[in-house]
Image 1: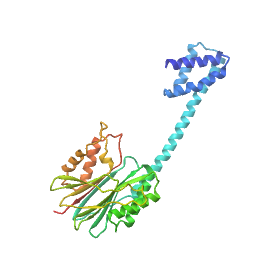
Image 2: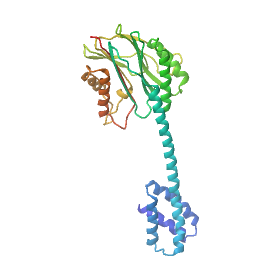
Image 3: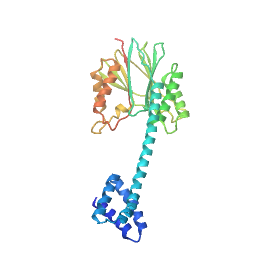
Image 4: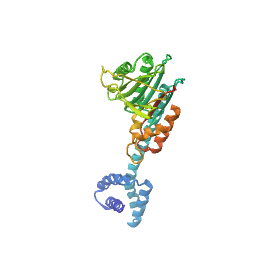
Length: 335
């Protein structure tokens, strides 16, 4: 601060008594940048100006009036800064409104009804880190004893991610009723590859559950491996299938596998908002802790389970390192 006072005094003296008044005016720009960087207010600069005039013994009205040229040059920079600030705030306000609209549209377009069955129970939760989510889940009831489901994560955020998810939902709803997971991913890959920004990719876990035979068919497009909780054995089994993320390769093929679901077994599908959650100390969560949480509420309804897991994760999550989070659970309700 002492340097600021000294510099401003030198500028005033140069302007009032020196021969190079233009140099004094030029120095005002540098001085303004310094005081703005220090977060000084215009009122503080005016007070400094008055104090320096008094300290320098300037009581001549003409000199006082002349010194105001320097004060004016300094304050002008504050005006530019304020206008820039207002312009930025106006742009942010417009952006926020656009994001509100995108969030509302996404919530409407991607809304998925969770059906109820006697032979199985479903639960799902999807919470965006910001207004617009890059996560997505969908459920399709084939009404013939078959159920398709998918959990996806867009590598990319904001409005483009919302648009990509809308396209995927449209594609899945259009032909997902009659397709096995591997075929569905193959067709969805073509939708993403042709219609979505080339720098935006999508991971997806796609399942088809036959609750007549308790068979689960599944494929993956580079998504997080899912889990099956074997109730009788009290063990978790990781399931995955080979396949590249959607939108990378035009004629991609996707591996399909199947497994039998025992009584009260659960399939758990999630996005990296679960597996890569950052704790308060900025370390990644130990996924064994998530499994322990699941064990604690294994007898609950899946919707209560996903809500419990979400609330438990929020208590340990670093609030400054949030990511979109989606969790889907299907439980075989047969005894």
